[in-house]
Amino acid sequence: MLKTISIAGVPVNLDKIGRDKLKGLTLDLILSFRFYCAEFNKHPLCLVENADLTRTYTPMRYARIANQIERILEIPVVFILQSAPFYIRQRLIEQGVYFVVSDRYVFLPGMLINERIRKKEDPEHQLSPVAQYVLLNYLLHPDLSEFTLQELQSRIPYNYLAVSRAVGELERKQLLQARKDRKTKLIYSSMLRKDLWNKAMPYFVSPVKKIVYSDEVGGDSFYIGGVSALSHYSFLNADDQITLAIWERDYVSGNYSFSEWESSDFKYKIEIWKYSPEMKIGQQGYVDRLSLYLSLREDRDPRVEKELENIIREIWQ
Image 1: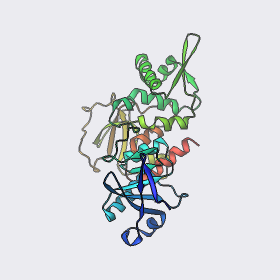
Image 2: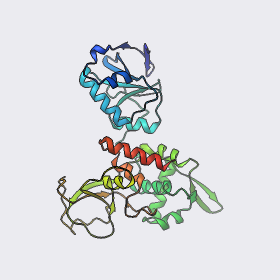
Image 3: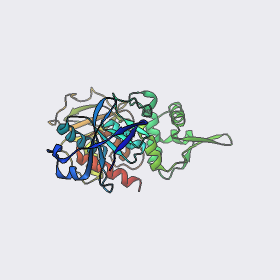
Image 4: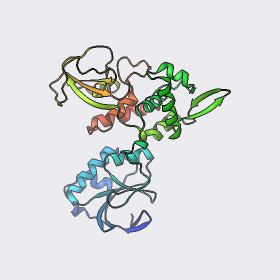
């Protein structure tokens, strides 16, 4: 049982919170965690430690647990984590979950400025649509070990200049590397694809730029996306409303009657994407699983989160 913890080098005393003060929480939560009260920078906190290390929780689940505890104790909740890779810390931050990982990483906004965490709003720490498309295309082709700019340009819907700039961006972020073979520049990654995906996670953004609704669509530029695609890749039941994805270049708002007002009464929910949903991997009309994950990772439905985690795990098995 912990008596002290170090937060950013500052020792903090912990006092165990008795069960009598946790009335309103489920028995499962009370047995699964240890609860402490503490003060940091004159802020009262509830620090929560996992009592059963065999159980794991998703960032979204941590957010829900924190909300339940905060409703009872009426003070901020901070989770004490033994370890957490960068992409997990980033997802915790996106969910607004406060945490301490040993004495190395801290997320307590308003109480501590954590310079280790890249700001999500900073465009320098986001991938451009073309760079994200190039990296995802590479990740989705496991048989592709290295490629030239010309080879890449020939199989994606961008011109040579756009591809060259995107690869340069990925090199600067150390997500891809380049080497010279005589006069030819070869692009590759020395990392396993799973590790590259995790390393790139803080840079990825949702491909969805805008959402509109309609009762009719036409043409072959649409791909099935959203929960409709997730139900195809998993055991999730499909919604009655069909979600479609289309590249913003191919979207012509004047062709049909589109509404920007959210409503389940329309037959189609249409996601307008920043890059093409076509990845040249035999998608059979569905968006690729990696882009699908990025488009739905903010969804707060626990069923969606569970199936997203499952399909990503299947990809990297």
